[in-house]
Amino acid sequence: MHNSYVNDVTISSVPDNVTGEFRSTLDMALRTELQKCAKGTIPLRLEVAVTLYSPQNAFQTIMIGDSNKIKGTAKLVDPRANTVLGDYDINASQGGGGIIGALAMSGAEGQMSTAFASEICSKAFQPD
Image 1 (spheres, rainbow, N blue to C red):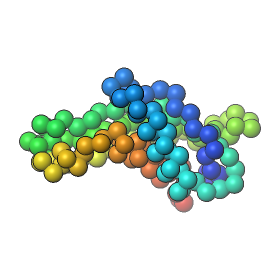
Image 2 (image 1 turned 180 degrees about the vertical axis):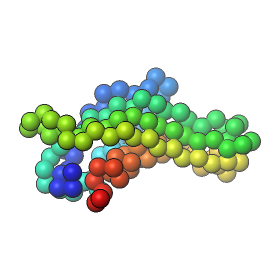
Image 3 (image 1 turned 90 degrees about the horizontal axis):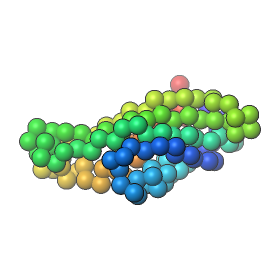
Image 4 (image 1 turned 120 degrees about the horizontal axis):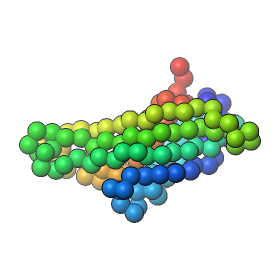
């Protein structure tokens, strides 16, 4: 994938517990992060399905610590041949504890969208 870039992003599914803005937040995070890591010359399509979004529980974070979690799949597809070149399981989490941890993990959908995108970069576009 090192000689490729993503020119099209498709988000096929997101969990029911996200806000109406999540899909566009994720799309923006994917495009922004992938521009940083996927700098080749061959265009690919990214197909994403988010299967789990688990935001932190503020009370639990303050008392014992908690984390935001996001899971899903990312497929990189050659649009010319419509063949899957890479299929990745994506798991990302960010944790914290106490009042500072609860405050730091606010804005979780944006943070987890960026974490999801960064995980795609590290799995698909970083040198081996």
